[in-house]
Each structure stands twice: as structure tokens, then as C-alpha cells.
Image (cartoon, rainbow, N blue to C red; front, top):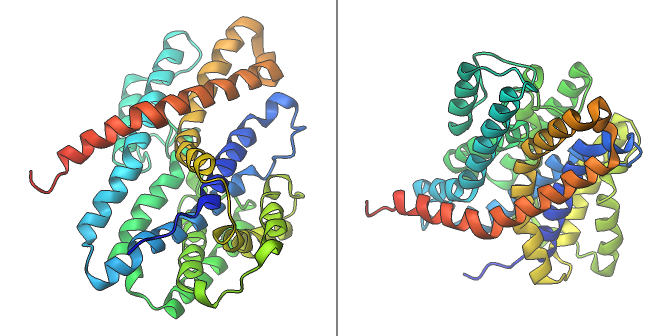
Amino acid sequence: MTRPHLALLDGLRGYAAFGVLLYHLRHFWGDALPVANGYLAVDLFFMMSGVVIAMNYGERLRDGSLSRADFLRRRFLRLYPVYMVGGVLGLAVLAVLTLIGEDWSTPVTLASGLLWHLLMLPEPLFRGDAGPFPLDPPAWSLFFEIWGNVIYALIVVRLSPRGVGVLTALALAGYVAASQIAGTVELGVAYPTLFAGLFRFWFGFGTGLLIWRMRERLPDMGRAGWPVVVLAMLFPGLPDSDLWRFCWIVLVLPLGVIAAMRLPAPADLCRALGQMSYPLYILHWPLMMLAVKLAVLVEGPGAWSDPVVGAAVVVLALVVTGWVTFRLEPRLRAGFAALLSPSR
């Protein structure tokens, strides 16, 4: 069975990853960039992941033509190589910063961070200010992604659309309640909200699963879909209001995904953006920390608000991401594939 290439979803992934990058760099421009809600890109990632997983694997998992073990092997090969690079890069950066006196990590904390990172689990021993994944904080969402894929393959894939709808509705209720208790929609990032990140993941991922399972019943927006996609892309600049945020999370982002699935887009460009989105997301944080801490040595604390430093981080992140995406990651994936080959 030939599965469609949803080109515009690839493009949206690239846009969302760049939105996260600018969200983390906004202080360089005095918070003048309209990206204060850039972290909602993760909700969009989860939704698009649900669509792609359901499209590529759902039916085959249900009819038995693809085993759960083979599905998880494919997901591991897709996610782990770049994830591992992010952890090793984060370790190297923190080690360098410790040596030059710009960080105070110890060999024990670094070793613990690397061990738990490589296991794709939160660091449980020292629970430092850097959060559950101290070597590479954005890795928190990959923790939910990979382990959520395990639960999907074991249980959720067998649910009817109504069952997935109930799961998604319950996750939304938990998401709203937990965000009001925590005082933030950005759940899952820090230790106090780590467990609540389950609600955030399953609402987004479940929404994506539903969109694909119900796609034939959804209306075709035609050319009207373009304004919907553009509206969805405005999430980084939303007003500082949970009402607005949940309006986008629950209504606008899903409608944007539905519209993007049926709109034409330049395939080669969107494919490249989609390929770079995950490495950009997972690698930019340690690169930012290295660049800024080195800049602080030269110009002092003012480096944290120097737009030139911010622009340099953007360029550095894009260059390293390009190299990892098109040169390093294919080799790592091939190596892991050989290790995990069923014939071994």
C-alpha cells in the first residue's frame, strides 16, 4: 500500500522547530520577538507525530503485517541516533564549561546525566535546576514520545476511534487541570510537572491519531485551508492567556494539521525542513549554552542580551543541524540498524 507524503506537515515541523529555537533565544532581543508561546510547538509536534504514526504503522500493526517489535525497532532507529548525539553533545559542553569555570558539574553528576539520558529516562538522583534531562533539556518530549510509542503499540493501536477519543478527552481534562494547578501550560519540562506531561503528550498524540483515523469524515477545506494553516502558525505570538493557548491547542492547531494534510507544497523543500526539524530541536540547547557561556567570558553578563550573540547561535545551530541531519545521522542510523538486524 502506497502511503501519501504529507509534504506540508514536514514543512510545519521545520517551522515549529525554528519556533522553539527562537523561544529559547528570545532574551537576546530583549523579549521583543513575538515568540513567548513558542513552546506550544511541542503540542504541534505531538499532533503531527500521531498523524504520521497512524498513517505509516497503524493499520499494519492492527492486521499483524507489522510486529510490535519491528515497529519499536523502527521508532528507535528514527529517534535514538540524534537523541544520543544531543546527550553526548550536552555532556561535552558541560564538561568544557566546568573546566573553564562557567559551570559547576561534577564527574558524578555528568555520569548520572549521561546514563539516564542514554536510557531515555529522567535523571532521578540529583534533580538539579536543569530539569529531568540536564544534558539536553528539550529531550523531555522525546521521553514521552518513545515511551508513548511503546504504549501505543501495546494497547492504544487496538482501540476503536471512539476509544481513542475517550483517551484524548481524558488527557485534555487532565492537561487543563494540571496546567491550572501548576500555573503553566508548559507541562513536562521540569520535575514538578513531569508526570503531568503525560496529559500533554496523550492529548496531542491522541488528537493526531484521531485525525488520521477519522480523515475520510473530515471536510476538505480546499483553498480555505491556507488561512487556517497560517492561523495555526501564529501560535508563538499568542497573548499571555491560557484561554488563548488552549484555544490554539484544542481547536486551531488540529484544524491546521487537518488543512495541511490536504494542501500542496514544494515536496523537496518541505522534506528538507522536516528532516532538519528534529535535530534542530534536540541540538540547539547545548549549542546555545556553549556559545553564550564563551561569549560571557569575552563581554560579561551582557552577552545574554546581545543580539549579535543570538544571531550567532542561530547560525551555529543551523550549520550543526545541517551536518548532523545529512551526514552524521544517516551513518549512525545505519550502524544501529546493523546492530539491531533480526539476522543477528
